[in-house]
Amino acid sequence: MALNLPETFTYEKRGHVAVMTLNRPQAMNALTKDMMLGLEAAVEDFNGDPDLWVAIFTATGDKAFCTGLDLKVALPALNEGDDMGYADPATRPFHKVYKPVISAINGICVAGGLEFMLGTDIRIAAEHATFGLTEVRWAVIPAGGSHVRLPRQIPWAVAMEMLMTGKTIDAKRAYDIGLINKVVPAANLTSEALAMAAKICENGPLAVRTAKEIAVRAQNLEPAFVLEKTMSARVFASEDAREGPRAFAEKRKPVYKGK
Image (cartoon, rainbow, N blue to C red; front, top):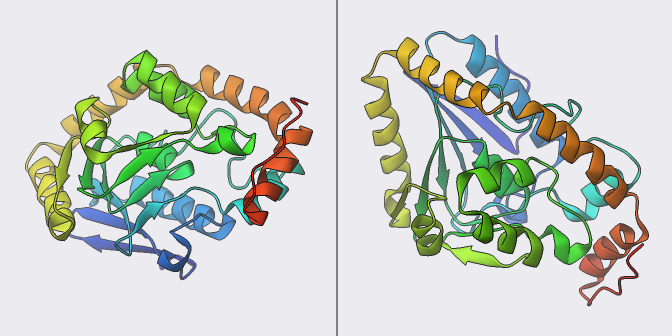
């Protein structure tokens, strides 16, 4: 059955490989709620299709992979309690996907874009890609699993620097700290991701899925995700969290009060 997906998100099947693509390049592939729900539907289909063994998660355009939620729309909604597609506090992007997911990062990967990447297993990036969690600059926090996943995937001190300064790093630095697997010329990104998917598909699919499921479930992430969700709510309800997106929209330096 065909999925009812927005134009800003595409989903195709190439043999045993599913390709999920953010398709809003004119807006730096910033996420809307429709895109989040489209991805959720695609993930459900991928999980339920026994002929699909590997997924590739990528985006269109040559500038940005994903800059996270569209701040002008999403932050006011989050201030008012809209979950923006994160209804279950115990899960985060790709958390309950036990088949391998490869991300092909074609440019800027920040905020929610990085959070989605953190839920994938193998990451291939174009040479010009950059990575970061910029939310604190606007008095909010990356509540899509970053506080839980990032310190488990890279050294603690580096994770804390990224979380607390909002600074970005380039692809070489991301590779050096183990955040991504490979850096390639932008023109080779898709072929490299497909080659990696093909290599995985040469292995026993049940064995591959089980290996990932053991690794994911052994981390027991759900309680930590609930903690992040609960504590982030008080930040999104603060005065500073209203000032931050206003300053972003008005392209000025925010004035924070710590309340």
